[in-house]
Length: 148
Ligand code: HEM
Image 1 (cartoon, protein in one colour):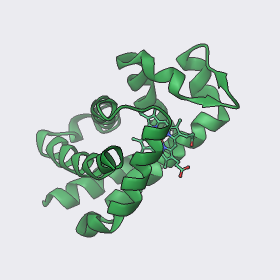
Image 2 (cartoon, rainbow, N blue to C red; image 1 turned 180 degrees about the horizontal axis):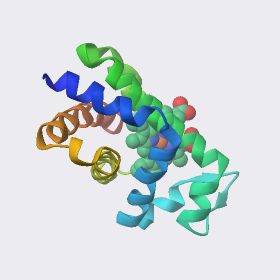
Image 3 (cartoon, helix red, strand yellow; image 1 turned 45 degrees about the horizontal axis):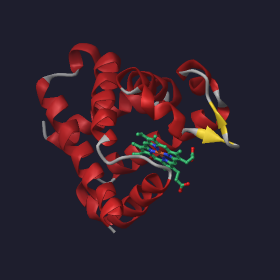
Image 4 (cartoon, rainbow, N blue to C red; image 1 turned 90 degrees about the vertical axis):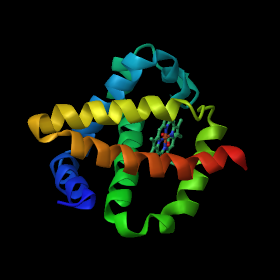
């Protein structure tokens, strides 16, 4: 099977419950880098703990947004350049809220962790490799937002 088929099949198992899987991703992210927690502030209020953040409706909306971006990438595997401008702007917005470009590597590790948790034995080395490539392409496009 092609890389694209591997991505589509594996994403089908995740995208049915995006928030649930997004919570796994972001719990892992806060474990790996607790300093990212203060970047999420709604109405200028800081969260006291990752648990508090992961329960906030605004944060769950961010999770939905993240999953939608990944969903868009999966739907446009044959034409990722059409997302380039959107992703560059998305990068700019993240730079503006204080995200460092390096943090997207930790997000990538957390994404792989979530996929492995969800897919179990179906998350073989070829699936993993396909996701590393796709996520890399998304980050490369977002990165341009920091350069501008
Ligand atoms: C918006 C933080 C990763 C997609 C935001 C906002 C913050 C934020 C503070 C504005 C408030 C909000 O909309 O909730 C972060 C941090 C990240 C991260 C700290 C990890 C280090 C990502 C990733 C994606 C993403 C990986 C998708 C691939 C979005 C989208 C928005 C957003 C679509 C809405 C932008 C808009 O309003 O047009 N992010 N984010 N974020 N984020 Fe993230």
